[in-house]
Image (cartoon, rainbow, N blue to C red):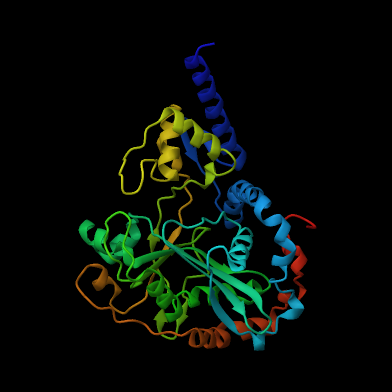
Length: 383
């Protein structure tokens, strides 16, 4: 059998596997177009992500299964949480540390697959000093180059964006773990991301570092954080205030594109197919000669299989939020201001406001947190 016939058979098999996978997840494939389910409730969106989440958990098993018992010790049972004595603290995650293992393990429990972040990364655990248990996660990574709602809010030109995008980070994970999640501590975690602690950690890690591509020295000033809601319109970030300041500002919705619906065990086969049959769009010696990102890999594969590259548009639009770290963030990002007029919010100030506004009132009537057993957090059974 000739190589060309084998290649056509391999392509046909992969094409069929992709279509079957999309349908199994709940997408509709009609007339060469991928459509989401007709009714997109938050629970339905979770179901669409379920296959990708399961695959991510299985991939992580080898590295985390043997240490799951030790990691579970960092998760509180409900009887270990005393709302009036909660004392949150940000702990920066260092590479190859126990904190990094805990970050990876806890992020596997999100109802949507959590990215590892792109390029630069700044990660934190939120720990309750009262009992030493994990409250939540903050993960910041490089933002996408083009994001319409963000770019329109800033009002910058393409040249301004190229110059100042390095002063922006995107929150790829932001939220609380149980039992703290029952006490609205997801709001607290989102508030702590705006703290001076995060801003100073960014300065410490990236100030004075030269970029790989442009060879420019980073000034280490974090002017803006962006994030998108995982389940459409967000109830976590909307109307989240610190005093009179609206911390998270909604600026629109994404177009509903991404790669999660191909991240369910097929991405490895897609990658191998692309390596054999496709060429990277752009090759630059400074950042390597491979494909630029997962999106390019999937687009190339779909086109080579005779499918539309627009299948990366899954139709699940996420709400986009911007979090200015300074009063003049937009002017700075447009190059109209040389200095940033920072908001100075300490962890203690943010928590005090959260405690009085949300935590204690919720704890007074919602006692679900008390019934949480850390063993229910286990992913792989007895280890």
